Image (cartoon, rainbow, N blue to C red):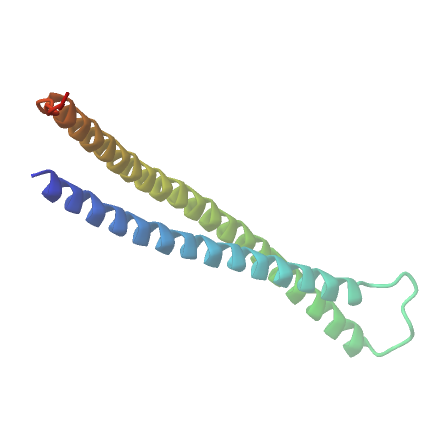
Length: 141
């Protein structure tokens, strides 16, 4: 019966380890998504700085000014959307971190059960050795 219990705990540990690995991979993907979204936000901010209106605009046509204003407006809309995407990616990362903690806690619990079962088996074996009758040695005098 203990052998059956050990096999069951071993299977549970393998499953929990696989789940932990999968959740960790999800967390890494969430971190990469946050990094990509922040890089995109920074790039949009850099582009917006490049087309910011100057105090004394160079003489140009009205269409150039209209095009630049339109481009700035589109960049501001993109910057706002990038902020939302970064916030959403950050929430996803927080969720992935919580899932990783849960999976690690589950795996640790199984590991503790296995350790406890092994300690109980060792104590049981020691008790069995203690309860064995002493062997008598013949002494020849």
